[in-house]
Image 1 (cartoon, rainbow, N blue to C red):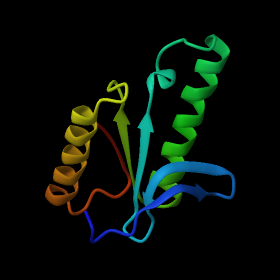
Image 2 (cartoon, rainbow, N blue to C red; image 1 turned 90 degrees about the vertical axis):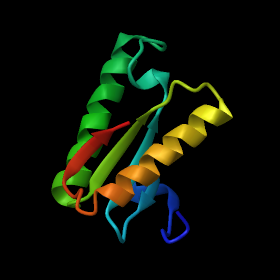
Image 3 (cartoon, one colour; image 1 turned 180 degrees about the vertical axis):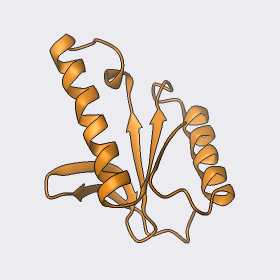
Image 4 (cartoon, one colour; image 1 turned 60 degrees about the vertical axis):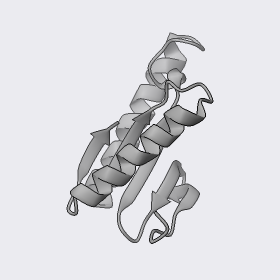
Length: 106
């Protein structure tokens, strides 16, 4: 997707980090590892992570009128898995020209 100006570790609302963003097009991508859904570091950490994800989704969709794409990472450093997810994002962006104010889970 070379026609996109991707920014890594992009900051929104002064203190929230987004993994990958194309702010001009309103596309924001979070690469969610296991710690976003599995109790690895304790229940309070997991609850905090889930809450922070909801806040980021709201900022992107409501305040920035953008699309948050959340990639569920089960690949554990698997190159084929990553390539498959990148293809899925590419296809999503080709098919859906107007995906503003939405959260998409891949």
